Length: 280
Image (cartoon, rainbow, N blue to C red; front, side, top):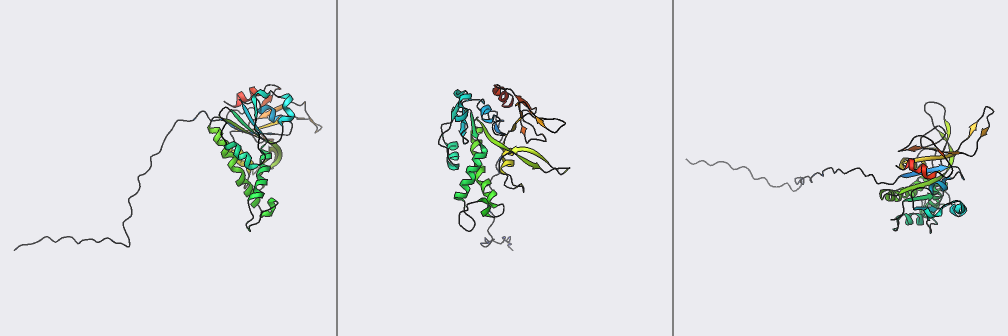
């Protein structure tokens, strides 16, 4: 008697539930050397007339200055203009972005925006001219967008400027934003709140859409340049016009630095020595 081995049943494909596709190959992590030729990113702030523009002209040059505050024409007689390359044609927010994205920066060692406070005003004007209300119409004031929404729109407009500057930093150029100062209340969970000097950039009390805090995070150095003032027992402030650069956080000023922590007295005519200590 002949026996046959039963054959396994033939499985027909389930068209309704096809087998999953094979998993794609997993990428391998890539390692590289630490880049050491990046330019420094600087936020320098202080009161008007304290010398912010003057000391940045002593940064490694040639120094290209985007002079939004029209400061250079008033300081020309006091400056060594051989190190300065004024950037022309910047009149509004789009032209500021365009010039930073243009070619022709190869010989420049430092780029200065003077001032970021004025650049923010341009960003506000551009926002009002281009960003419609949720109902479709343009607004004439940030408040017209609704509670807090105008601040968010300006924040979204301003943020790409930092990316433009990062491109130059990666190319080895130093980039500096100068700002006027303001006083701001510092929330203190451990005790009493207090006042300190901070850059005059948008910073709502809610903490959301704060250009000031975002630029502080972005910068390698946040430097406060202020006049030296002593307060006597009579409560009166006295000073001799001397100035100090603060590179580290103190109760009276927002500041930080990746390279230096000690306040630096600013001696007249020695700004180049200041940058030699910081840009290392």
